[in-house]
Length: 193
Image (tube, rainbow, N blue to C red; front, side, top):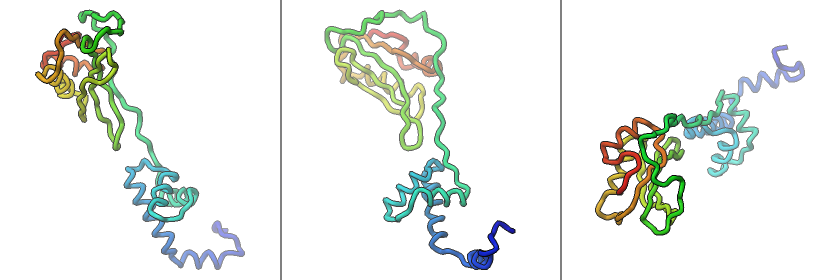
């Protein structure tokens, strides 16, 4: 009756009257850690955080406390990055899939990618020397817009970079918005620098 066994009725009443201060403190700390993780930490992560602080607590206790508080962890979804669907036939194919180069600074290639760090997406534009297979330059931004591509392009065309006789190839631009605004920087498609 009333979800309490007959033999424990008086004990259950006493527990209901008595407030467990330690349990309330643990609940508040679990809730703080959950909010601190922006609702992404599960019982294992919260247990690890609390153990780092010196609190001895098990995963199942944290799980039970989270359930009592109604906390459900959620992970960030996959990044929705617009893919280029139309191939640019107006841009000549200088390399013709020949990626072996005899000397450094003959062919550079560039691309943009995104990186998940510190709870958000960051965008990275990199320029590689195909001979050395190393990064020649890069630009970093919070948005995949023309500013990111222009930053990279301005660095490439600066006087500090030795680019005599170098061909710059932009492998792929995933966003037509970025591709259209690259012309504002002076870099369209495959460029002979």
